[in-house]
Length: 132
Image (cartoon, rainbow, N blue to C red; front, top):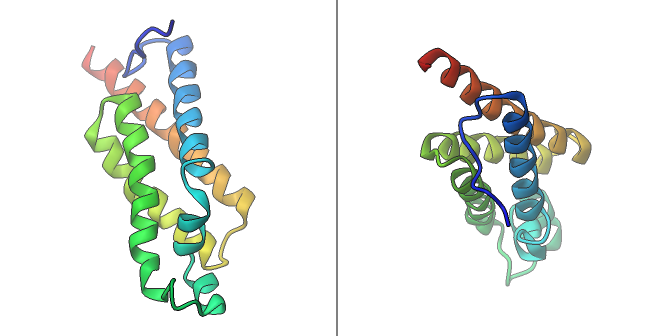
């Protein structure tokens, strides 16, 4: 069975494990747990084109927030840090708004999300070294 993840990581192997766990959480939250409703609902431009009375443009904010809260939840569960979860909420929201606005591509969006996860691991590792 799985051992509990040590966070913050105190060595290179544990840091890679933490990054891997965060990427797994991201994949789950961004694909099967997002679903068509949130994927469509978080995109203002797409909602405007659809002009579906069942999906008014105003739902984008709630759908985007719900999607980003799912991501923040995974970060909190994996790292045990509510601060990193809050950072994830804000960063994921900003990155996805840029993608939905056409300012970034799908690949750029995914790269930025993975770089955020890497940043959490590096920052937590550095803080652990400083406090040790």
